[in-house]
Length: 440
Picture 1 (cartoon, rainbow, N blue to C red):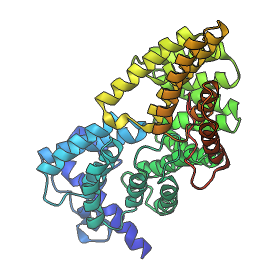
Picture 2: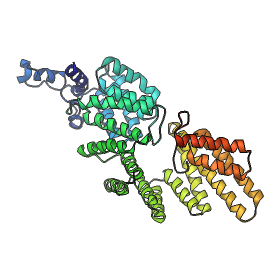
Picture 3: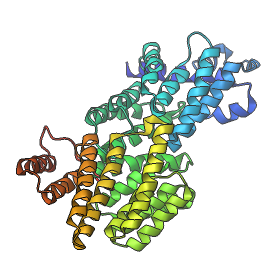
Picture 4: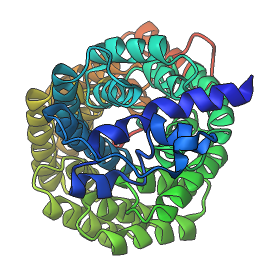
């Protein structure tokens, strides 16, 4: 039974090669992926035609050309975690589907659905993935697609409602994909995605040792394929090493990636975080500034620089960096609403709450209690907005308790926030998951 599943699961991908064999450049690129079609497979089974000369390849159709470009874009997207490449894959594979036969092959359906799921359009992923499941039920990649579906958005660094169910699905998927022919089309990508997706979710539920295991496997597959590691992979692996106090491994992981891809701004960001862990704040500030300089629209180093401004008491710098952080973040959300997440919105609002709280403290030092109260009221509003977005924002809860105390709020109100904070810290069943970010 299992062997018949393996044959049926790899065969549909093989048929793509016949359609593209005549395109010399594309065929060279796809040869390792989309190998012999059904005729060649029949020859290998012992058919007498195995000794015959191969038939002349048919000229590629417009559908074939789009399929080639779509497959190449999807492969690039997998190894780079680049949403723009997934969008290109969507465009090309939709064209291939529109111009191609009435019953598209597994590669077109599955890669199209996965590209939609990873480019911020999970609803559009449902139809091609459902068609792929119905036409090719034995293909193991369906479990991978299901794990991505139940999580909803990209795992990021924080637990979501579907994170644990997704990990259970990925456990089964990785067992199945281990039996998948290693020489079959997309075998490396399918294994890589399994380890990457499970590793990201292990990190999200704070199983950092297991995250290191899975992300290390993904990194090993990347190297075996001669690819440059994706910034998402390197960053999360380095973060996991930091969390378990393996600071040397965290730094060596990111420095190796920086050597391979010196233009990637997130590598400089993570090196800043490693420096901050060691209390080397001047060095951290330099790395964050270099990260911001590498890409003008990169918002996250602005939040880190704002935080360092707050730590050092430089509220003018804190405000400038928060303004830049807010501008870049909201610009990104307007350009692509799918990039907005409650966590990011919470971090932004908590940043402003922290600023107004500090401004209030500064005014009390000069004796301006009326002005301080105005600042604390603004802080109270910002922390409330942060907690509305993400109830588990730990620093916003802590700071809200401080603000309410300074404003002499009713004790029951203060007690309620204290109760919520303790529930999160103790992992109470009905408590929201803890959310930790620069200002959260």
